Image 1 (cartoon, helix red, strand yellow):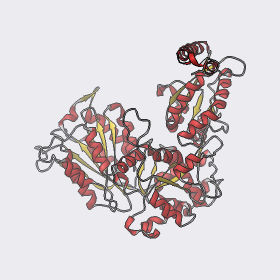
Image 2 (cartoon, rainbow, N blue to C red; image 1 turned 180 degrees about the vertical axis):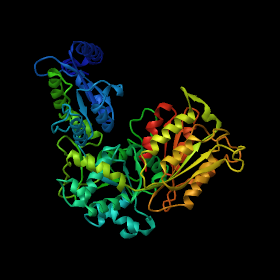
Image 3 (cartoon, one colour; image 1 turned 90 degrees about the horizontal axis):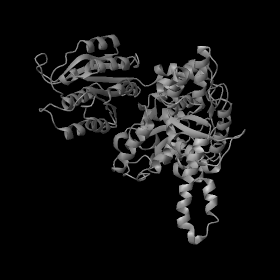
Image 4 (spheres, rainbow, N blue to C red; image 1 turned 60 degrees about the vertical axis):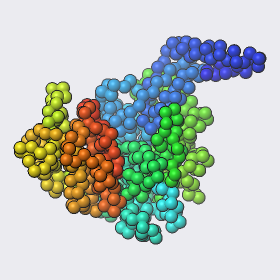
Length: 589
C-alpha cells in the first residue's frame, strides 16, 4: 500500500476501519496507476540473477512510494535479470541480443565485472562504461562452507589458512584431522569463467599463495611457487560447478532424504556466505506449493573463514552512460532508497550483509560466528591481473578423464529445423570439445542397439580413452551412422565399469551421455540396478553428466542417473539451448 494511503488510515474511526480500509486499498491502487501514468522518467535496471527477484520487489515498493527526485517529478523503475558474466559480454558487444531492455543501471554481483568491462571497452577503443568505483547496495563474503561436524572439527585446530583447509589436508584426507573414517578431503567450487564466486575463490587462492591481501601482480601469477600452490589446491576439487545453487539444492534434497547423498565426496564448498544462510534456513530445500521455504536441513552448513582473509562480493550500483540527466537523478534516488533501513532488512532476510558490510545477528547465528577480530578482506586485483589469471587457470585446474557416449539411434535422424538431431548434437559437441583442456584424457563411444554394422554390442568404442585428440574425435563423430534403438542403461553401465577400470585418482573421472530419447533396449531395462551400480563411491568417484537433447528425451530418468553419481543432468530439450548446455557441462571439468 502507498504511504499516502497508510497515513490516511491512521485517523479513521475504529468502527469504520474495515469498510474504509477496502476503499483505501482501492484508492491506493488507483493512486499507483495514476502515478505510473504520470511519471515521465523510466529507469531500466539489470540485476545479477541471485538478487533479481528481491530487486523487482523493491522496485515495486519504490514505484508505489511517494518519492520525488531532485529537479521534480517521479520515476518508474523496472528490473530485468542476467548473470554478471553474460551481462558484461552483452554490454561490451550488443545488448539487443539479450532480448532485455537496455539498462541505465547495472547491478552485478561484484566490481570484478566492472573492471572486466572496462578492459573490454579499452581494447575496443570506445568510451568507458565503468570507469569508476561504485557504492555497494549489499555485501557477501566468500566462505568455505562445511557440514557442521566437519566444520567444528576444523575449528578445533585453530586458525587455518586456505592451503591448510583445502590443500595440504588433501594429501592424507581427514586422517590429518584424526578422522580417517571420513576418507578423502575434496571440495566443490564454481568454474571462474562462469561464476562470480568461482572467480572470487580463485583470486583468494592466489592471495593466500603470495601471503598478501592486496597488490597482486602478473609477476606473482608467473611465480612457480604460486602456481604450485594453486595447482595443489585445485587438485582437491571434486568437480567444478556451473551453478552452486543447484549443487546446494541437491545437497538439501539428499540431506532431507536422510543420507549424505549425491555430494558425499565433497568435504566443503567454496561460495558466498549468503547461500549458506539460504541453505540453512530451508530456502534451497524442496518445498510444497505455496511454501516460501522448505524444511531446514538436518545437518546445517557452517561458514569457515581462512586466516589469511577472504574476498568480498560487493554488489555495486553502477549508473551506465546510457542514462540521461533525469535518469541519473532517478538512479541516485533509487540507490538511496535501496540503502535505507527497510530495504536493507529485505536484503538481510536473503542472507546478505548490509551496504557497509555489517552482518545481522540472525545471519551470524545461521552461518556461524566470525573470527574474534572480525573478517579481513583481500583487495580486488587490477582488471588486467584478473584477466591473466583466468587465462592461466585453464592450465592449473584439475584435469579430467572424460568418456563421451553419443546416442546414434535412428531417432537422431529426426529434423530440428533444416538439420537432423544428430547434426545439431554433433555441432554442439564440437564446440564443447574446443573448451576442454589439452591435458584432459578423452574417449568417445557411440551407442544405439545391435545392428548389422555392430552385431555384438549396443555400444562401440570409437576413440579409446587417452590423450585428447580433438580433431580425431570430431572426424569420428562426423562419420558415425545413425540407426537402431536406444540402449541407454546398458551403455551407461558399461561406461561406468570402463572408467572404474581406468580410474585416475589425480583426475576428475566422468561420463558424458548425450541422448535424444529414453531406454528402448529390452535386454537391459533395470533402472534400479543401474542406479545402484553408478551410485557414488566416495573413494573412487565416477560421475555421470547427461544432456537431454530434444523433446523425446527422458529427462527425469537422466536426472536420476546423474544425481545418483553426484553428477548433473542438463536440460536441452529445447534444441536452441544445446550449445549453452555443452558450455555448462564442459565447465564441470
